[in-house]
Length: 120
Image (cartoon, rainbow, N blue to C red; front, side, top):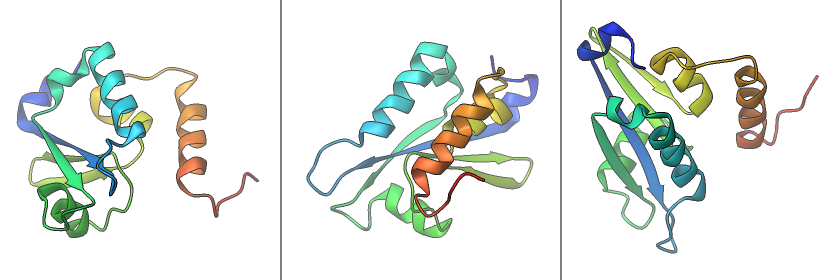
């Protein structure tokens, strides 16, 4: 469940449409997780970053925040803006859902998103 101060928080979910017109599979997976967990209600806006249209709202938001991965979340709260490109970190820190398995999943997601990194 969202935290009590969630009313002061605005969350934008940015998902991608690929250059071939297909929806991003990872974005669809994250959206399904949000729906299944009941957290979709905490999302104020869903915006599309369309690779075919560099002027699409999602592409503009990504450029503004130097984000190259999708999906991502823009969390505006108390004058601060935080960007989350890792769903499990977003879920834990913003939505308050967590668990012992989450840090491992988060680490795996970070490694998949950054193939230049290696496990130490």
